[in-house]
Image (cartoon, rainbow, N blue to C red; front, side, top):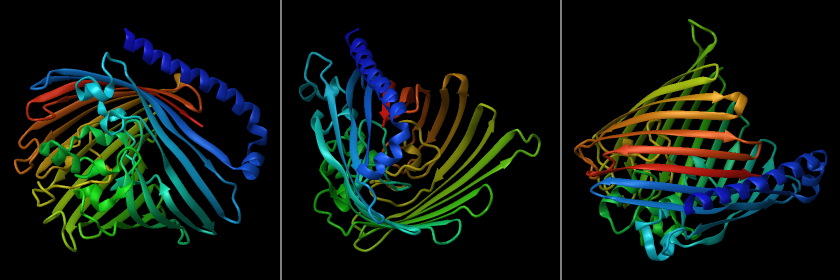
Length: 449
């Protein structure tokens, strides 16, 4: 009961603050453009997050946590195409049990809502210069990235952030070209679910978005990309990425990304998306997607021999307020860091078949599929999704070798206003690890401004 009261109180506080914010926004709409031009823009997000997980099997335990936090930033007025942005990120976890979080640890609290060691922290997460000239934009400094194999992975309280230089150009018709060099990463709170004391969970981590040395980049610290991936002492020149995104064909998007992780690996990511009207009923909108990942070791091969391939396909349809899709993927029986498959140490997680928590699809010699359906209750600003995913893990995978892992779940989003969102989620993996599974519920309140 205490937990429920605290969670509701936190949500109510956010709601009341949001309501006031909405009134202010309405009052200021007329002069907003002038204000931004003269004084710049304040932006941010307030997030309150409650999570409850009950383990079953070889692990019998319940842990739950409540935290609040988010970010607030400022972008200067544009001066001949040049602007600067800075944003503070922070998290504050509540001690909702008899023991403090730092004392009780993961037995009572979920580490994914806190800093390393269940600490609260505040740091300068974004600090970059942005320059735009005609069709070219250059962004240099600390920033959020959302790319297929290096991304924010904003699944808990705070996202991954990066130090990078990114150049984007759209001179070619219907084409966006991107060149980036990433030197450092600050790991978000989700990384704390993978303890460095467990070799098997580290094996899981490096194929689920987090490297062996991710602890070096926690609590607001920015660590070098090589060390994030493979641990202390693996200093490299970072990751250089090139991309092209083409939208010149009606209903079609093609993209190609190449990541050159110096002295570790080269990763190629390809994706094609197409949408069309169903030939039997124009009211049914169809869509299909293909994706492919290839990874090979390069230079000093600090991760060892890497020779990995993955492909996935997805077919979906929308009819009125109802939409759904089915997806399938296969990772080859291949060599990779530690246990083969595709490694993703920098947060990128583009797979069509990933579950809410289960990311076994990148394990060596693994077949996966997923089905999902969403209904948009548009009169009530509510979207409800249900899904089921299955992972037939190969014997050559170090973690969960030979397991037939399954995960079902739901995701309900209520958009109370333009800025205020309530979200209720649940996931229920079966045989996630060799001898355990769990039931998990999340309640999230986001207010964006």
